[in-house]
Length: 453
Image (cartoon, rainbow, N blue to C red; front, top):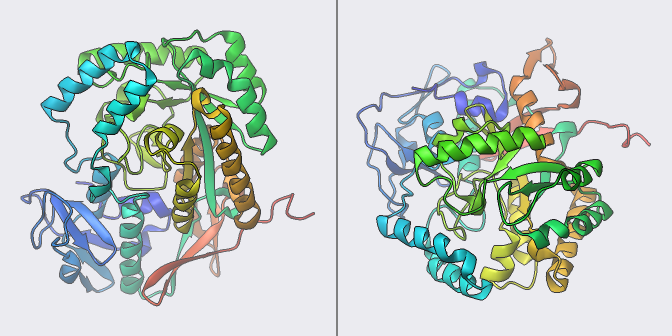
């Protein structure tokens, strides 16, 4: 069983002495949903109350069963188990056999279907999505809320005014933004140059995720043109047929080919087609990071979501969750004509200092009416960067930072704390406080070279 405080350690990188948390033996308990206070939902085993198979207003609240004794917090559940369940979507989201047959049939005939027919089929599949109770729409902050509730208990138990931790982003940035472009067709490939011009004009670098055996060729010159301009190459599936995770044997065969292309292209990041995913199979993929798991997947063929707006580890792979709605879903399935939903999601993510990640397709975004909205989004992000100090990063940069941060240590120098470890010069010491029953963060953003002029 994982240590109850391990997930909090991974998230905050604070000294273990402040996380004196233990859990009761819950080995014989069945997994299900329960509540932990007014803001946090859990899925897993618990030694108190009852659990439900679905989220409902009648979830049992285990907060009354928490005990604090001699500076230690005793919980009726294991928070590391609960957080891992959400991150790897182990909370009862399963495909029925009818859906599996329908999905297989759809992807078999998809290449011959006009786009208008494909959209109607997709909209039919999404019917009733607004009634889904969990994950929460438009952004699910379950893990953030749970982590904050646990840190409040740790503060209460330890008797200290504040708990030091390593701030989430370099230089004390309030949040992080990554832009990714999934290239699905020859038309999308040919539009990449113009899309890079747009991104560059707003000071944004992005990753371009290419399909190695898809409907278009991937030449060395094309890849070089992307890298030469400071953008990044990622692998998007193998053939973009929606079948990657259907059968284990076939997946392993395809994974072997994907890994060969990753080496050939110099790609460190992976994304599966249509955001299909099975995290328990990721050990066969030789990538440093993945970006295939949505925060909340109401508008995706595979429902679920990881319920966090922060990067996290799946074994040795860093997961960069997709935290905003894809451009295709926004403009074609929801038929939106504004960026209001994106703005709402950005605001909610920044309230938790999270990762704002986008999927924008060169195949669709270069159409005049959509391009105008994309330009509006980039302008909005630039304005936020000026007022909130956001980190505009490549996915590979975030991957490297999250790995470095995971190895940093907070050292007590007697009167203060400092950070040791590779890249610690970019890291910032922050503090978590209890302010009127809510957790607040305090930190002093680092002074960078550009700030000092």
